[in-house]
Image (cartoon, rainbow, N blue to C red; front, side, top):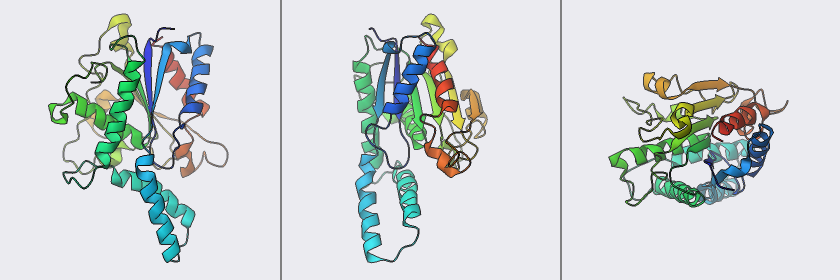
Length: 272
């Protein structure tokens, strides 16, 4: 079955396994099929980067617990896994800090692998990005769109994000990374190079889902007028079960929650 659409899925903060996206992809495929579309026409690619930081974080916690009397160890693990990821992910000039480059190497390789599944390099791309993954993908797209990012020569239009037709962020914390800048400029979306066969440009959207109880997920249009212009909707939803839907644990509950997967599948299906 020839592919007509590419979808990349990237995780965010916290403990993650390499198969983090499997359940969500299966559910989205089922929902797309229920909408009368063929999920076999979708090329999927997960972007996994958690292991880059997992071992240093684990090593530190073990040493700290062994050498000191610490309370709230489970909460400390949450803080180190989540805030540690955000703190480590920063673009700095020091060659001693390579986390940004390592993570973006993973992103570039995953997009290249996804491109390899496609019959050409002009198919529309949708990005599903959770939590810090939204900030990572925004930076990757920015680097591809601006000469300062100096993308390597020989990249296809697909790899340069020219065909990006959908941004679906959920539990996104981009606003937390904007306060250090006097002027905050979003990515160009949709990209000027996005073609319009089958009205692809007309279907392009940036949809941002957040649970009001999720203290790590935020609206994006409120950042400034520029973000208000490129983000189509900030959509409040309730994710998680009775134990998590009303508190910060909801941050990890978007993946297979009906309030998220149903509209996400409907958006995906518009490109098939």
